[in-house]
Length: 407
Ligand SMILES: Cc1cc2nc3c(=O)[nH]c(=O)nc-3n(C[C@H](O)[C@H](O)[C@H](O)COP(=O)(O)O)c2cc1C
Image: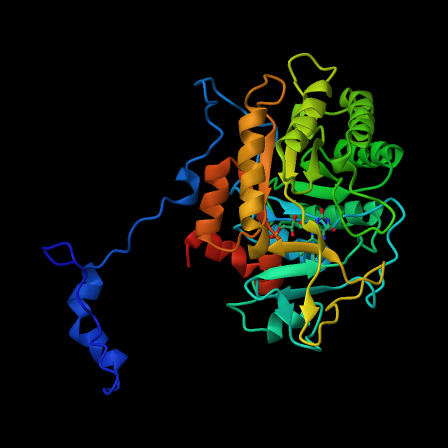
């Protein structure tokens, strides 16, 4: 840097001249040697939003995710290989699985599909490749949004617990996976099935006290034809919270210690008006744990899922995707929902902080994050940890290092 605080002008942008980079580097060798890039705080010094409540009291979330970055539930966390890769990535603080059912889901690639599309155009070319191929063929810089008509994973919950066992089991064989990185197992089903899912998780946690398991109950998939997302409906949401409360109190006593008790979160859809936020927060306040001092039975909320009822057409005005209902209507995510997801996170953080039983509910912020700036916006809005799905589908696990390193 010069005495004036300016970086030297490295390259004369005269288009008529070929630039010999090696010669330039030699010429400016002394400047390169003394140049230090602008500091980004190392991971362990990253400011957290969690240390203090608005009134100055200390806050401690019940789920720890460090670094505060992870994948959100998606088809890119379906197989044991994908989950292992996410687990081994040093830039993820936890791994979320694709949503599973006790009995598995009948996945049909001719019906359950996704496409990446440029948000500014909300359209695709006729015959645009669907599934993961679309990430490879669309101009990467433009196709930052996604539409999907997926249901759930073809693998059962028990299979996912088997994957976790396989991945963490390797740690005991001396491989590099030595941290207690949490696995967030995404599940869905009826309230009774969710209670049973918690029992399965608790059982797995009981057998290996080093496991850090959390259950994320997906109450917000917009793509199941005859089943609206339960988190939009107060009566249904309450039923789920009661089932979670019952199974948590049944299994708590059997765990080796408080850290082994699987933490429970709910995956919420994007909300658009005040009454909806109030309804959710009221349910969370009412779902008080039977354990003294624990507050709500819900340890974290993940918001947001995709925005349902969205449609992308190709240039012959036909739906780009197939879907269960045959309309091609599905859930939108990526850049197109980022402002809505940010608004949901900010609104929930403010409202949760107003009640002693909900102030320690952690928020995992999701929706359109694909770079450091998006990550920082989510944290500023009140997300303790930040997750991504669309960007993972487009860039693979390298997206996490580029978000953390700002590259
Ligand atoms: C192709 C695709 C499939 C998804 N499947 C699931 C799922 O099985 N369960 C779930 O909870 N969320 C699912 N989601 C939602 C994401 O987890 C995330 O909440 C949403 O896409 C917003 O994040 P993003 O903008 O980073 O994609 C899916 C998203 C995409 C794009």
